Amino acid sequence: MNDSSWGAPPQAGYWGPSDGGPVQGAAPAGPAYDAQYAQQTRPMPIVPDVPEHGGDQDDDRGAARVSGPLFQNPPAQPYAAVPQNPEPMPDAPQPAQSQPPPKKTAGRDLGAAIGVGVGLGAVIVASLFVVKAVFVGVVAVAVVVGLWELTKRLEERKGIKAPLVPLAIGGAAMVVAGYARGAEGAWVAMALTALAVLVWRMTEPPEGYLKDVTAGLFAAFYVPFLATFVTMMLMADDGAQRVLTFLVLTVLSDTGAYAVGWRFGRTKLAPRISPGKTREGLLGAVAFAMAAGALCMQFMIEDGVWWQGLLLGLAVAVSATLGDLGESMIKRDLGIKDMGTLLPGHGGIMDRLDSLLPTAPVVWLLLVIFVGSG
Image (cartoon, rainbow, N blue to C red; front, side, top):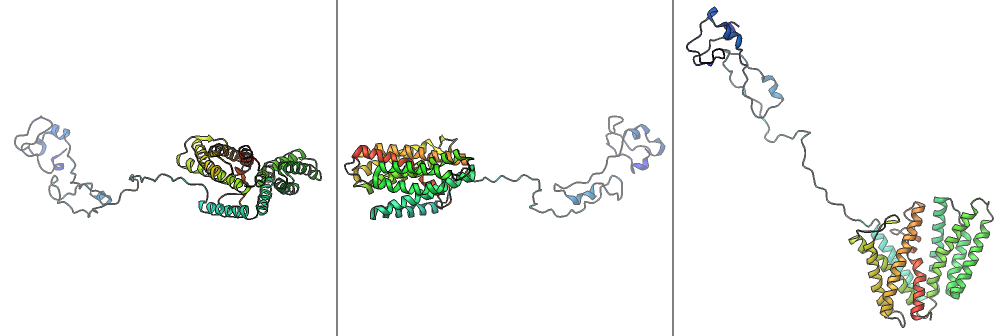
């Protein structure tokens, strides 16, 4: 390397890499310059001072500009103003926003459910204490609609054609016979309805006969026959109070199960059948029904005693829960959530009768045992 590439000889005090010490005096010019020293040294690149905040505008300032001696740095060039609050890079991690925990919901329109429930209750109570025959008619209508919902779902989901006409006529007859003739009349009407189902189905091809009539007999027993025990309660002198006790205990059992289960439910009662039901909810149903039973037996039922109401409430809570689970089994087998859509917030008529139907014979029997059929 010749001295023209350096521009100026090394200065005094320069630490040379060839001799390991400072050079005393100026180096000779021209050919007398130490060739070994020239071979072992290379000029250092001139790197300008770079500000802390760089950017795309810094790309054209990566090398030094020559003006004057080679080793003399040029005057600093002004840089573009850097924004005080630069926007974060697109890939910069953003702080995670905490999401509020999901709130528990009832799963239905509570406003509509409460409104429909209050309306139905008003109709039932008014018919119950004004004219008993009107209440019997209300029960008969509920039975017919329930049979229609059940047979319709069986046909849609399983292809089972249970004869609706003999079921509807026989079901209404059972309800009336239970009120007029008691248990004997209810059994006779049930037998005649079963016979009518068998005969009615004979008018169609034999394929599927057995499953159709079996479903028809099940529907006749499940809906109208169990409902006859409600009208059989009405035969007593305090029949209206007995029916009201039956309704109040069943409704409060369902209410207690829902309220306690929704708030404190942790342990599933029957997850394969009804995942929403909990053991804590069952305890709530028992507590509500037993408290209501003690009050109703003491103040509403003639010759009733409070401790009888405790037993009655316990039995109602158990039978209502089993009835609800029983219909849940049916709906799971059919692959549906509700039996119908007639009652906003509730589903269908059968979705309200599920706990009432199996509870009716339990209440009727216990009242007969405790205070007689009178």
